[in-house]
Amino acid sequence: MLLAAGPGLAQTTDSPLVAELKRYLNDGAAIATAPSRFDVGGWAEVAAISGGVVFVGTRDDRIDAWVQNHRSKQSDNFSRVVTPFGSWAAIGVSAVALGGGLISHNKRLLDTGRDAVEAEILAAGITTPLLKYAVGRVRPSDGADTDEFKPFSGNSSFPSGHATEAFAVASVLSARADGWVVPVVSYTLASCVGYARVHDRAHWASDVIAGGLVGTLIGRTIVRRHEGGEAQPETPPAAYSFRIAPVVSSGGLGFTASASF
Image (cartoon, rainbow, N blue to C red):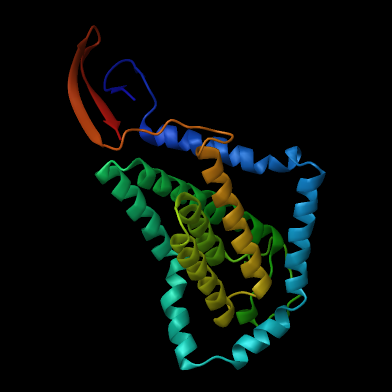
């Protein structure tokens, strides 16, 4: 993108940030409108998934009681260690992959980082917060029963944001990896995050299941689109540069700034 200080504005190509924003908007629109393209089989899958979440919901109180009855100092420590992988540690993993891809010019690593960051934004940054606000389920730590829902009240138990974050990153890493090691490690760690949220009484079990599904479905959809499915966005070169230069025109002296990855 070319910006001139002075009279007039010239534009050539989109900056990397604008191109990335367009990619997010395109993918987000495709995900949001996906139900309009479901066939009978697609709606059957939705019904099966929803039924599974509802079934777990009928057992939320029993699961909560069992987990609390088996709490210990060791489980408290374990929960404290794994919980960050549903928040800042997950963001760190994505940032490391993205930064590593840019520095090493490794396209596969770069694509993994880009997809992971996008999955986090669309799943944990947009979709889950909207669902939380609309559903308004009260958290178990607030002394709620499993059936306490207060839509648009600010209560935010359903679905779990930590589970969404963890599974969004895990699904991207797994889909982009070869072999079984990365999928096993990433999904196991994401599952541990889900357990920790129930252990700490921050969420009911069905909240965690729902969050994991949101993260996984959006993460895998993003990878599928960028691996040659519905969308094949052009990947910018894995390098970064920033330049400012003077420009002399009929309007006087100005400056241009350009940045590229």
